Length: 117
Image (cartoon, rainbow, N blue to C red):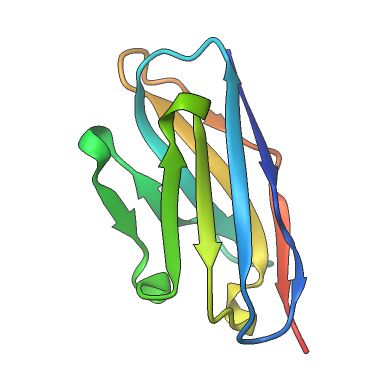
């Protein structure tokens, strides 16, 4: 079983920046996918940015050019640098991990990001 712990959310003004972190611990087999989703009030959870097998990245169109996903493999940690934040980025951000062999999926507890003046 893996555990995902997120940090870094908060309140920021439009145009500001935040950096989210997600550390995976526990018994983790080879990782297929790891990254970030978000869910705004009244909306479905959506992909923000993930690393796929082979290190390829996938970004939502709405965050391309503003958000950057990075990782530290030695620490099983992924980061999400969010720049030029806008009110529509307000959501609970969830860390996600999917194992390659077992196909098990894990979610973090979520961290709130609020963009407001």
